[in-house]
Image (tube, rainbow, N blue to C red; front, side, top):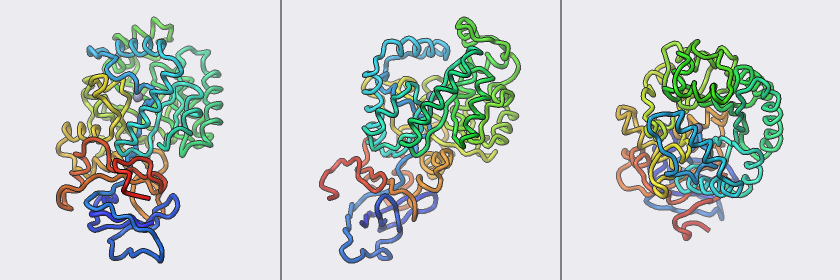
Length: 417
Ligand SMILES: [Zn+2]
């Protein structure tokens, strides 16, 4: 099949006017100008007209099962208080609630042009049940929480069980030690070794809040008190930054997606660089909590791969019906806060950088020969030079989303078939 469009944004510096892309099976086999890409005999041609085709987004951090919690939590400045609200609200949710929320979250991402997501799976068995229910390419990262020394073997058992079930169903399945304050240093080390042994990616919430910073650097603060009251041994606190703590624990795997990284020293940035870590920034979550300090320029200068994630609807504010998982909204928030970063760099964060972080950099995140045919389409309303800006500022659902060569969402059912 040949798909024709007024414009394609194929990746940084690759805007093509009067463009065409050939799809065979689940792959892109050609991309270029319409004239260079005539159809073969009998090959169907679909012309979507005044539109832009671009790579489906790659969301590098999400919690789909919290998609029912929009507007349910408050944030009065204390991260520890928010965590307490999460723990109690989760207790009130049933399996059905979680399944419905997971599905609703997946639908929100598809409608807004996202094709692949790193999802933190906090409920054993949930991904295996839900994966067949959505065309969204969900990469399940099993969440592991255990702050008592005796929890280590149970965490390893859970990780192995979930990986056995999830890996055959996913593009990439991995492990997510929740955070250094909820996982013992020993477990951080063991889980990183387990990941490396099986060539798995890992992800961890790290250096997110001031509360976490105080706990590890000073051995004080509300998170310190909360975790101490829960029976966590606190003898690893007051000894350095969260990043130093993870490094000292041996908690960096060969492939670690560090989520948030809001508070870092120069030495922390160097540690992240040495660990070859990828950084996931969640702009709306960061803004809602009022976490200051995410320093894009410093991380970019250090050569770190920076991606975008949506985090969850429990952590971006907005009303019960107003908030949605939406990579356009994340890019817009980022661009508002970092007006000097070029539109194409932000688009890269939402596409190919996320793919690279998941070791899928040669599969998804660009429109290129041999890549998966994962493409989103929106109306074109301007000139070719405005294409990156038009993608970034798009609001609402996309016109169409194609994943692995198949249309999975459309605003207008008459376009294809
Ligand atoms: Zn998160």
